[in-house]
Each structure stands twice: as C-alpha cells, then as structure tokens.
Amino acid sequence: RAAHARVRAIKASLPRPAGDYDLQHPAAAVATRIDVPLIRALLLGAGCVDAGVAAGRPCAFLRRLGWGAPLVGTVSMPGVFATTPSAKTQRKIAAPPTPPSREQRFAAVTARCLAAPQESRRVVWDQLVSEAADREVTGPLTRAQVSAELGTEDWAPCLRFALEQSSKVRGIDDLRPENITAHVATPNTCEGVESVALTAALLKALAPGRPTTTAVLDHAKAYKNIIVERAHRRHAVVAAAAPGASEACFFVANVLPFGAEAACAGYCEVAEGVKALARRYLALPVLSYVDDNAIPGYADDMPAALDDCAELFALLGLRYGKFRHGPTVDLLGVRLCVRNAALVVVTVTEARAASLREAIAEILKGGTLSPKAAKALVGQLSFVQGQMTGATGRAHLHPLRAHSLTAQASHTLGSRLRAALEWFARVLRHATFPKTVRACHMLQPARPFVVWTDASKDGLGFVWSWAGARRYAWAESVFHGAAAPAAFPSDKRHGGPTIQLLEMEAAVLALALMAADGPLGDAYRAARAAGASGVLLLIDSDTAQGVFIKGWAEGPWYCALAEAFWALAVRHALDPWLERVGTDQNPADDPSRPGELRFGDHCPRLDALGCRPCGRLPNVLRAACPGLPWGAPGP
Image (cartoon, rainbow, N blue to C red):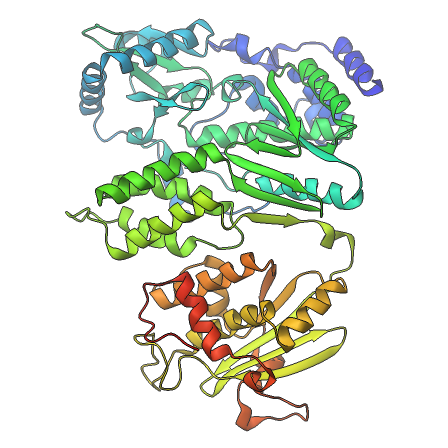
C-alpha cells in the first residue's frame, strides 16, 4: 500500500513533456496510454537508469515506448547469453531491405489476395478493419495513398494469414519475402522459462512445508501496445481484399506486427523494464517468458501480490488481461508443475503435444514429407526438444533438419526420417523426457559425486570419488572382441574403433553402472543419501563432450551414444554435469591401460566386482536406437 501511494504521488507531481512521445505518429493515442514520464521517474528512483536520463539523455527503453520500436537493424533483447553479430550479419543489417522486384512483388501479392477463398478473405479483412478502428493500422488505402502516408514509394506489400489458436484467430504478417528478417540482429536472447522454474523450486526449497504457487499475468495485446518507429512503417504494409472485391487494398502497420522478428526483441526490452519496476517497488520476483509475466510465490501471499501488480501496471498505463495461478501453470505452450521436493517439472502443454501428434501421424500415414513442411516441423519440434532434459532428442532432430535443407525430387520418408518421427510421436504421447529443475543444490555447498572416465585401445577406465575416498576400475570395450557390433566408426590408421567412440562409450557406461547394482551404483546411491549434489562427470575428450552437449553428430553411432547418455540420465534422475579434464590430470587414464598401472591402488576389472558391462551397454543402446547394426544381443 505504501509503495502504491508513493507511485501515485509521483504520478500526480510529474509534468507531461511533449518530447516523451511522437505526437505526429498515426498511433500517438496508443503510445500516450503508457505513462513514460512516470516510468522514467520510477526507473531513476530504482537505480535502473543513470542521472543522465533525467537530464534528457536518450534511453532506448523509454524511446521504444514513446517513439516506437524498429523493425530492422540491431534490436537489443534483455537476456543472459549475449552474442556479437558476425561481420557478415552486420553488413546485411547495414544494407536496406530490398524486395527482389517491387513491381513483380505487387503483382504477385495482389493476385494471391484475390485468389484466396472468400472465407479467408473475410477473416483477414475483418481483422484489419477492426485494427484500423483501434489505430493499430492505417487503412484501407490505395497504392498512391500508402505512398503519400509514408512519404515514399520505397515500399512493398506483404500478405497476412490467419492462424487458428485454441481460443482465438491471430493475424500473422508474412514479412519474409520483403527480406526484413535478413536485416534484423538480436545480440542476445530473451529470458527463458527455466528462470521461472528455478525461482519456483528455490522458494519451495526455502520453505518445504509452505504451499507454493506460480501466477501468470498475460499482457493484453502485448505487441499492440508498442508503436512502430515512423521510418520503419514502410516495412510492414499488408495487402488484403474485401470479400467479393476485385481489387486489393493496403493497411500500414502502426504497432508491432506479429510476424516481424524484431517485434519479439523490441517487446522483450519493454517487458524487462516493467519487471524491474515490479521487483523494486513491490519486492516480488516478477519474471517473464515473452509476454507472459510469471510470479512464483507462496499460496497465502499470492492474492495480495496479484492485486498489487494489477494496480501498479494500471498506474503505468499497461493493460494486463488474464491472471491465473496454481501449482501447475501454462506459459506459451510450456507447463510448469511444482513438486514437493523443491523440484519443477517442465513439459509442453497437452494441447501443443496433441496438435503435433496429429501432424506426425498424418506424415507417417502418407509416407511423404516435403522440405518446406519439414522446415516448419523442425521449428515446432525444436521447441518440444527445448523442454526436455539436456540434449535429449537432438539426434532425432538432425535427420529432419537435413531433410528440410534438401531440394530432392522425392519426398518419400527414409528409414532415419521415419524413425525420428516415430520417436517424437512416442515422446509426445507419454511425455517421456520432461525437463526437471531442482533448487535444493543452491542452498548448500556444491558436493557432487565425481566420476572420471577415460578410454584407450586396451579398455575403459573409471574412477569415482566421494568424501575423499577414490575407487578405480577397468572394463573391456564392447567394440573389441568377437562379439563386437558391426559397422562402427573405425580408426583408419590403427584399426579398431575411433578413440572418440570409446570415450563416449565410457561416459555412457558410467551412467549405466551408476543406475545398476554394483560398486559404482552402490557408491553413487550412498553419496546421494549423504547429500551429494548431482554428478560431475569428467571426460578426457573435447569431441565426446561436444557431442553429448549438442546431442548429435555426423554418423549414427555417435548419435546413438549421445541419445543413450541422455536417456539414462533422465530415466534414473542422474543429473550429470559434463566437464573436460586433461590427460595428465585424469586419474582414469591409468585404469584404461591396465598393463601400464603406475599407482599402488587395487584396480579390478568391473566384471570381477559383480558388474557385466559388456552385455549391458549394447542392450542400452539397442533400446535407444534399434535400427543400428548390432549383431547378436549381449548377455
């Protein structure tokens, strides 16, 4: 209450300088709904901007609100992982977007508008007319009127298509033919759903007996609250034809259009400023996943917290729609479920999973997939894969991605492509590999269960350590001997399997043995019972580490080992963290060469300790990748 009283007092005392808004903009009424002077004063009081802003120095965030967001160029997006655009990308950004041929483009777009079914024309036309009434677009206009509105003839139209969603039909403007996307760079990424999951898990760990919940605040018509910079309106002109009309008309965007890559980045910067204010003045852990604001908290505090947020956002001039909260919530196709053990399970929503299952079933039934359809499917399945533990599933995305980049005449599904689609269908049906986010490790010093692995032509070496005690072991590779599988990658100089394949085999076998009965598994379970914070797996190969992290590589055997690694990690909740260790610092280097032992510790073979890895590993990989040339099953 005191915070709101303070904000209201600041709001009442502030002047309204005209320079905060582009009052000549056709959608100036949209921009002035947001109280830019109040936001500036609050950001300054919160220490989020420096004193130069108060003296009139430009601020990108505030300029977005009052003067509009760009559609081309470098658009900053608040996030954790920052990157620098390459020199090639910077050159593309610097060059103005130019359609292949303006006159050809006009002819093609207007012809497609008029050829569209009458019902599709009606839906798009009604959307645009409604948006024009709200000043979100200007139109309908003729070609000459658009040139007069923009002050230039240097523009070309795009098409809009209607996308049916669960509760609405959304208009998407297809800006790709105008080369707009090629001239946009976002140096960093938006905040991910993991931030929300980790905060929710952390609150649960801090008070295990207190019920937790997560609230979601949906910013109503999020992109439509931010105007487009006047000079960039020419990049978003939509052609549409009324039902029954014989000519197309045009609508010029005034606010951020759905379909522009820069729109997401521009909006996320605005969301970052709003979160900063809510955190500072309400002391709430407000997070965001694009236009959904999430507030993890305790159930008994949440109703008051939601009222506080609603009042603050209303004072700022921001329109928020649905407020919902519970132990399980959905954010933009992702479901978060808070469990009792300071654990949040992340999956895709059932609606999104069902839609993808139907699409994959149709493809498998028809037996064909065009590269264009594969490209769209890769985007959707990449989102699904992002909600899985580690790199699970990336090996199955690889054949789909490769197919989307080919221009082959035949669209028939090959064996690898069919296997990849069947794998995703199974995962979507059973939610096999959910992402799990734990916070309890943050509340105590890191004490992982440490495992070193190494491989040589003589065998595989393992060392594990907990509470200062180390154990050593050695095992034969399944790729050696008469029972070895066929057609694996071989070393061209020395024969036998490549060292990278053996290094990956050792890491997969380490996880298999941690999940099984035996000395390594017993030691791991004892360590977890004593408070071990996950598994630190140290491997002696940059290549193996890279393949596990990426989840795939060229060649089915490497993909099979990566897939088996993550399948074991998920199935047995092993929570591994991979790091590279040099040969000189790797204690598993000696056990991998049993004829060259240089230490006095006992180094038994694993099978002498009751484990039978030579039979176990092939069967683990058989289950993950049955299409590989395994030969006879192991014992």
